[in-house]
Image (cartoon, rainbow, N blue to C red; front, side, top):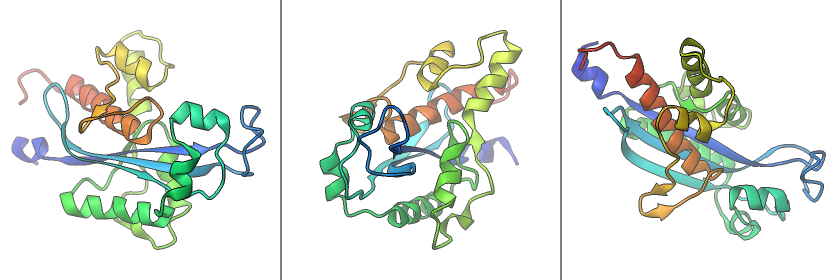
Length: 208
């Protein structure tokens, strides 16, 4: 692959927000017995020198016909009314993810913070839409931990704190709308930013 092709690589970064089960000490008022996906955020981007070049950002709130736990409403900013009135099913959201990959001819390897989001989506992929992706995703949290080890930094920290250690600040101003931490799109967007920064730090001097 030549340098021009490499610069044009396009990636999809994802993040999920979930309702927590009633067994969680923080969410005894939850109606569900298992973790339930209530929002999918997707950022489509190519690599840039200081920041990614964002091509499209999509936030999909999934229909959930119950009242959310108070803890999750406060943490994510997602309201019960939003999930109750949404007409988007989880299968719709997964299909949109596939369509975005095809539209932008993006990498088959998704980008995510941590391990679980792509795996959680695969559990609900009844129409095999995720077959257009690879078997696993780039785990940006692990990439950061490797960077931290080699630079004698504290390895364990969340997305926002890890960004700070790389000279980045969490940015929730996306496409003219202010979003906050634990919004799925805000987290997907900032996962793309830290991924871009880590890859730029890997690049050998003189390589454009």
